[in-house]
Length: 396
Image (cartoon, rainbow, N blue to C red):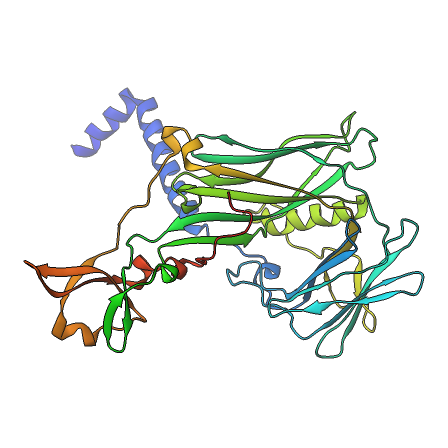
C-alpha cells in the first residue's frame, strides 16, 4: 500500500521529485569537494636553501654606498632573514679605483669618498666569511628627479601615504622608493620610582621611561613605472597604509622617503621579485621561481644569488603627521587593556624585580606610605616596545 501511494505521488508531481534528487546530489557533491580542498604550498615556498641576498646602491649625490647582506629564508617563513656578517665588501670602478666598505652587526656595509664620474662604470665585490667571492656586473649611474609631493590622505580604515614625481626630460621612467618611519609613543603608566639598593627612590627626570621614539626601515618593495604613459609622471603612488588604531598614529608620526630612478633592467628585477614574494597565495598567483639579478658567484655561476646592485642620485623628503591632524573617525588613544596595577606592601617589595615590574606610585594610608603600586614592565617602560627615550634631532 505504501509503495502504491509513493508511486502515485511521484506520478502526480514528477518535476518536484526530480528537483529533489538534483538538489540532494548538488549538496552531496559540494560537501565532498569542500572537504577535499587542502592548501597547496609549492616546494619552492618551503625550500630551506640559504642563499646570499644583496641589496647594494651607490649614491652619486654624496659619493657613498650602502650594501645590505643577508641570507634567504623560505617564502612561508615568518622569521627575519639572518644578516650576513664578517664579509668584505668594496666598490670598484673601471678606472681602477677601489673603496672598501665597513660592516656592522646588522649586515649593513657602508662607505664614503667614492670617486664619482658620470662616464665611469661601477661594480660591487663581496667576499663572505666562508671565502666565497661574488661580483656584480658593471653599472652606470642614473640621475633621479626630485620628489614633487609626499603626503597623506584619510582612508576608510586608516591613513594612506602617497608620493608624486615627474621628469620633464622623460629619462627616468622607472622608480623605486624605500623609507624610514619614526613615531612618538608613550607607555601606559608613568613609572615614578626606581629600585636602588633593594629600595625605591623617586625616578630622576633624565631617567624617565614613559615617552619613546621608535624608528624602523621599510622592507616591502615599492616600485612604479611611467613607461606606458605619454609623460614621465608618477601621481599619488601608494607607499604605505597605516591602519586606524596603530600606535604610529597615537601622537606623532614621521616618514623619511628616499626616491631612486632605476634602469629598465633593475626595474624588471624588482618587479619580478615583487611578484614572486608578495603575490603568492593561490593556484593562479605567480609561482616562485628564480629571479635573476646582476650579481654572481665568481667560482660557481650556477649558484643562485638574490639581489641587485645599482646606483645614481637619491632624492629624499620628510613629512610629519600629528594625531591632531586626523579626522575624528581615525583618532584613537592608547588603551589600558592588559595593564593591571597592584598594591604591594613594604614588606613584600623585596620579592619584586626591576627586570619584570615597575613602580608607578605610592600606596598610602592617611599620611603614611604603606607600599607602592606596581605594574608589569611592558606597561610602564616604553623601551620594551622597541623604542628609545632619546628624542631624534629632526623631531618637531
